[in-house]
Image (cartoon, rainbow, N blue to C red; front, side, top):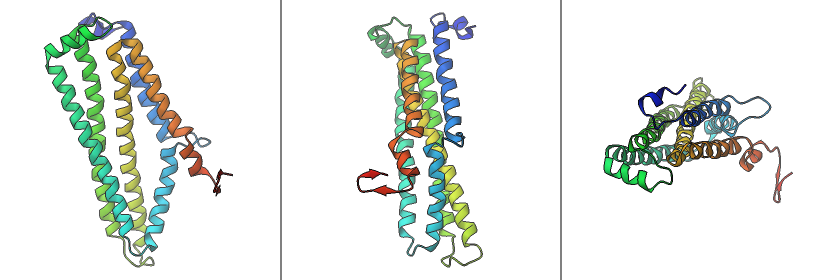
Length: 238
C-alpha cells in the first residue's frame, strides 16, 4: 500500500518502505536510549546519576560559581544548536519554494527525479529540523529554570529546604538534557534523510549509518566504559 503514490506517481513502494524504516528506527531507537534494558544502560541514562550527584556536591560547594557557570555553558550549547537549526530550516524552506533550483538539483542527481518528489524529500528534512529546533528551545528554557532553582538552594546545607531544592534542580537538569538529546537525535535523522535525495537506497543507507552511530555512541562507546569504570589507572581502565 502506497497512499502517497496515488498523489505523486514518482513516489514508489520502495520509497515508502525506506521512509517507514527511517521513522520507525528514529522512534524505536529513541525509546531504547531513554528506557534501556537494566543490563545495558545507555550513556544518557548513566549521565542522569552523574547529574544527581552533581547537585549533591553543589549543596556543599562554596562558592557555587562553578556550578552556575556550567549551567550557563549548557544553555549556550542549546542556543547554538537552536540557531544552527533555524538557519538550516531557512535554507530548506528556500529550496522548497524555489522551483528553478529544484529542477536544477533534479537534473544534477544521478537518479532522474521530478521536482515535486524532491520537494517532498526536503519537507521531510525540514520537518525533522523543526522538531530539533523545538527540542533545543525547550531545553534552553529548562536549563534556565534549573539555574533559577539552583539559586534558590539555601547556602546552609542543613537547611530544611536545601536537599529538596537540590533534587528539584537535578530533575529539571535531567529533563533539559533529555530534550537536548532528542534534538540531537532529530538532527542525526535529518542527516540520514539527506540520502533520500539519491533515491530510496540512499535513504536506507543513510538511516542505517546515522542510527547505527547513535546506538554505538550510547551503548558501545569508550566514554560509556569510562563512566561505568569503578577504577582508573594512568594507563587506562583496569
